Image (tube, rainbow, N blue to C red):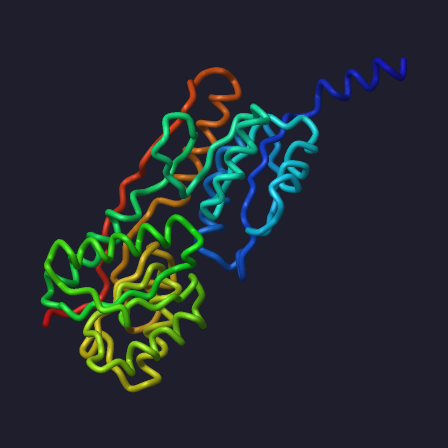
Length: 291
């Protein structure tokens, strides 16, 4: 009788999908994390699966991450919200043969399940927009360069300058680490450059917002003295009297598509590898001006 009850209990227990997120400062205030979780949750709540949220430190030992994930009861699949470009994590999950999808990263190989945007192209288009407005002294405040998104957005910035035959100024490339306070420090450095850039591409709206705060604090007008473009199309872009021109990336849609796809992979309805590149668009605010 006891064994039968255990068997009946195991039969009604839902299978589990893990959403693994690399931990970072103020992650639960992060537009990226919230939007991805929103998209994942939207699909999970209408499915036969439970969702477990797992946080891991970017420098955590891969074997420890593996233990945390594989010890989950009734594990069916893993969604990585990001991996901070740590290829060892992907190799680890492949070895377990557990269905998985990596979000916010794109892989050129033919066997890694992934979904994201073309960060390099999106950043390139944002910087080219500034160049079309007449700006040639264009700076950038980068994200955390341990992440693929930040690296690719920096590559897009450099590609736009090169294509338009604008010489790159190393002093105009400042790390903001996807952090508002660090972006403020970066903006102060740029304001004190001689000459001061006439435009800044910030790799996130949060950093663009911090940059605008610092500019106004230093009596530098936006956009009259300096134009600023952000990235994400987060709600913060519409705050204040200066609305941020930004790049929209469909984060909630990315989470929802990834979740639907992993369920189909688990159920044998979709073949691997799964790869998808989502489109981006520019959203115009009033933070830029023609020179």
